[in-house]
Length: 268
Image 1 (cartoon, one colour):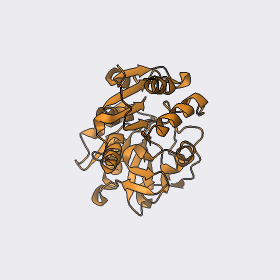
Image 2 (tube, helix red, strand yellow):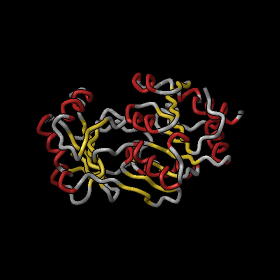
Image 3 (cartoon, helix red, strand yellow):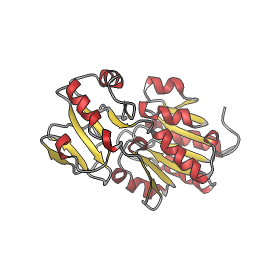
């Protein structure tokens, strides 16, 4: 059932949701987003990408906020920082140390609070092809950390990411947690940080109830966002777990599933 009133806030994952497989944004989806925004809805991007890999799209769509790094940072429409959640100082190395000790072959990559990226030399990423990122590659990322850390990415190509998350969940101190990042690289963050927490910080500022919010996504890193929002929409290309918990499953991102949902909303 589609809600009769426009939601106060609509949040969209980017990769596998808003963008097609080739990284493009269809005109139909763009127009639907613009129409929803013109009707007064707050439009938010919610992604695992860092801000610099979101800024161009955020500007193109004139979104109101961007929840980045799966909730570790939130930026406003003008590119100014709205919220940031760093790993507590006393634990900023602990999680990565535990991961490396438990899985000796793992490679580490840190997203720093100042926007830098510090990677082990052998860290291999699986980022979308449009990423233009210039990390500092070092022999050992743990020894190169010189400031607050937002997230640690774990390159565990030799081990099933699900096993990495399962094993580390019981080993990490309560102040930090390991979770899916949306890629094949699990990540360690401050406990409680997620797309859902990032969206909640936006909603509290502008006075919107989560029940009045919609969320669109496809990956395991969208689960907390789905749990937070009043209504959740999974793309047909999404992870089976995400499909199972969504209020509604849409056609895939390559078939303009978002546009179909928004057009139906606007037609009411």
